[in-house]
Image (tube, rainbow, N blue to C red; front, top):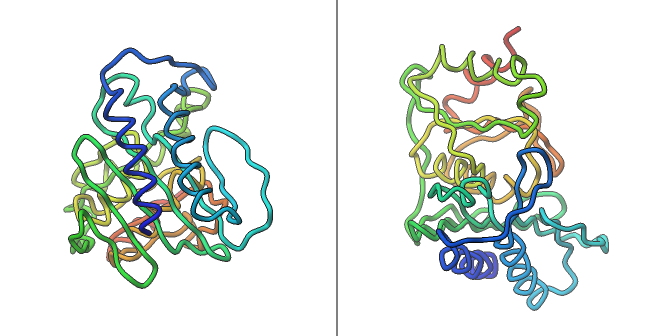
Length: 253
């Protein structure tokens, strides 16, 4: 956990130093961006992890790295919320999570603008700047605030991609869409929101955040309630109390 924290703090320093300045922006898809800051943060994190754990495998967003078959696998999102960052919208972070034999065991997420460092260790709890986190006690969807995100191919099938959003709009008090899944999950762990769902995510988007939620007393699964695994492309995470009700909404025809 300490190394994960060190890695995201270094990446966050790069993000903060370049925030609001002119940066080089490229496109990975029609609306999917990558910036020079993504790449600089990724190199910084890789350097930190490799210097401490040279035998561990690493899966990261911006490059494909050969895997050695280690029991330890790091999942790295060097700049979660790239589109926000490129537009100067202040909601982004660096996220690093470690799995052992397929189970998340340590993670850190850092929001450099708010100077909020979220950390978690399996069996040891979740923390924000050293303060122990606990999920909310919301017991009804109608009184809950949810958060979600949309995939980059949203426009390819707009009606289908919005079906769950529209469904939850009729069930919850409010829904937010801020554009950085790792931070969304940390906000859930901190009790700032009560539930989260999203389709078409990547493992690096959520591996650290999953541990934040579960160590804060919450629950995370696939839409059918089954375990997430390392390659899950969908997630529903809640304070635990709302997990059944959210699964019911997700399963509704």
